[in-house]
Length: 152
Image (cartoon, rainbow, N blue to C red; front, side, top):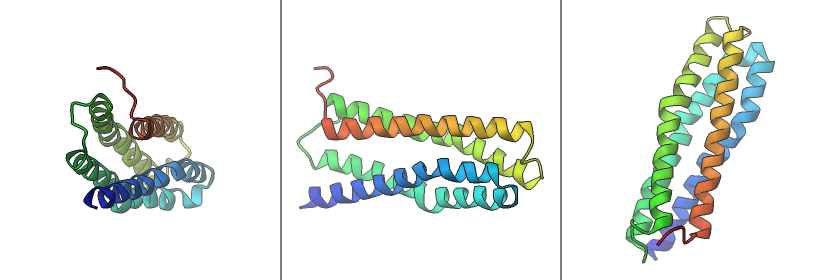
């Protein structure tokens, strides 16, 4: 019973976090194309990150570890080990690359430089990193659902 509860919470947390992340492509376009709402839009994304997305990713990670402890798999099982490494890479990329880009976009928008070449360049980088993060999450979902043999 505990395993099923953990799995449900794990899946719901992943859906919540990833679902919000996917919507950012729309939000970023609205920010670029609507100067009057740019700062508000970017700040809303930041609030969503802090209050909703990041806690959901953290909960997915915690429940993922608990699921392995409650399952017949070991942390050394190839798909489990690769999932853990991939998850940590995802978090590190989000914290060290994506978050600073978001902060810079907000600074530029607030200072009135939202139409500058610098803003557009950083916006392209943020979108590229967001795309990479999406690919990583899709790969994680594949690992957890297909549980491939990989090596052994």
